Image (cartoon, rainbow, N blue to C red; front, side, top):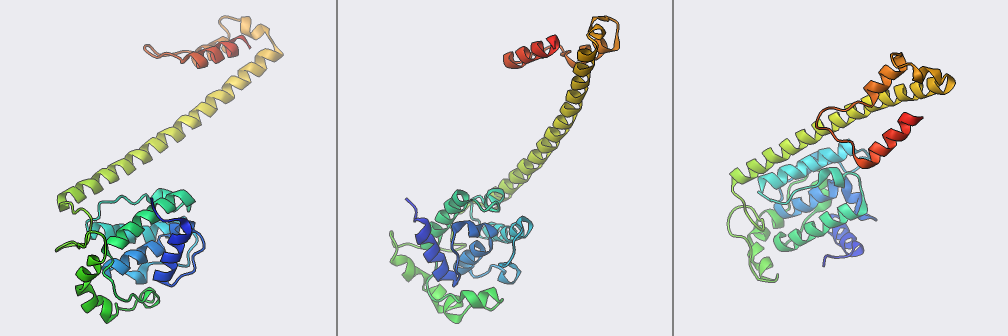
Length: 248
């Protein structure tokens, strides 16, 4: 079971010299970027924005984090759309995973978070001897092992797999956007038809004789509104509703 919210806040505030009060604040992406900078030391912190308050700015921070994941071949998917909403559970889940990753791959030594936020270089203890001593730090962890060669990731995937994953993610995003457009178009025409139906109902209520005119305009409009195509079946609940509407 992962750490509690308070434990995670104490850890991230201590590591990054921050004063976060809620895990939801990780939804800006800024603190998460710096957690991974403390591991790899190559996140462009000068581009990470801490004092922002819009989803657009949060997404820009997460793009930096996504680039770091891609560079170091970390297979974990970042649920950006969920995280930038700054909901507690989504951010808690991702922060718990991040803490486990940090526990396993943090190289040890000093990390000057404040200096890095100002675009400063890594201190010598992080860039040199301390990173070289990552093995001794890992020896103190369960299993006593550290990744050998390449990026520090739990499970390395071939570059081709990473590219394929990105292509699939892009395709999914494109399909979601297309579906969203179709749903908006559907709703638009539905409301148009509903407005016409209401007008017909009002006209019939004012003059019931209109509905009795088989060749009249009202009957023609009703025929279009309630017609179906071959092979299309109205769900039972909708069919009952349609019958009620036809009887007025």
